[in-house]
Structure formats: C-alpha cells, structure tokens
Length: 216
Image (cartoon, rainbow, N blue to C red):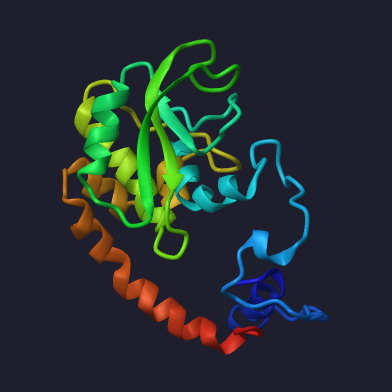
C-alpha cells in the first residue's frame, strides 16, 4: 500500500476518524519500481542507503531479532548477513539449496564497524535480488535465519528483550507478528511448510486491501 492507501485503510478498517485528505499521485502505477519514477532516492535512514536496501528490508529486518549481523555498520546493511561463527561458503550453499525465487546468495566476509559483532570478521552472505517480480523478501529473511540455525544450532541465538518499546516479548516475535514462525523454526520444520502457514492469511489480506487501492 502507498501511504495514502494505508491511511485510508486505518480510517476505514480500524475505526479511526481523523479529518483525512489523500492527494493522489499522477502517473504512478503499482508495477513501478522506485527506479521507474525518475525521482532521486533520499535515504529515509542511514541504514537504508539505496532502493536495493529497501527491496530486501521486509525480510532483512527479521535478522534484528537474532544474534546474526544484519550488516549494520557496513556499506550494505540488510544485504549482508552473517556472524563470526558461520562459514560463508557453507551458508551460501545451504541457502542456494532452498531454490528461493528471484534471489541468489554470494559468500561474503565483512567486519561491522558498529552494532552486532563490531570489529569481528563475520562469515555470511550477500543477498542479490535477481528477479524483482518474483523475489519474496519475507520468505528469504525466514530462510536466512533457518539456514543459520541449522548450520550453528549451539551458537545461533534469538535476541532477548527489550526491543524498541516492548520489554517482555521476544524481538523476533514482534518482528514476525506472531510466535508461530519462531516455534516452527525451532522445531526444524521445512521452509515450504512454514510458508504455507501464512499463505491463507496473505490471500485474505490481498482481498481485503482491494477496498482501499487507489492505483492499478
């Protein structure tokens, strides 16, 4: 959803009643990527330097709920993921075996200058989006976590609270919006089975959002 569509959604679906005016854009189509707009990219955060970062972020942000580095403190935040306890080539191979759509994984070694594992050499992967139309960032983020857990079950760990403004719930459950996915990962469930667990909810959401779409 665009910001205007999202505001309309909250207005209609959640009973919020502000004085709302949405000014629609001219010439924008839903299939457009940022690069198609001709508008310069202005980083909304120091850790969102390019449109490529934004593309992987819906899954890359899940890494914040673990002891993996999500690449903060490097020039490729959310595109580089790793930890000192991972072998870069084994990690890339494990992810390649999942045959995820629209993405490739390159073995990478990096040293964050701040945040998790600052000053430590991390083995990991760089996430390369190869097909923007089929890439699934959320599924990719879950896969990145699952592979790290399998490769280093004793060293991988979930980040402990507090996180943001929440002091009791696990950060990963806040980021995922549920504890079901974390529990499935802990049980070692196959990635495709985990994905099926949210497919029905996704179909329902897509139907419901039709009511507020202002662009095609």
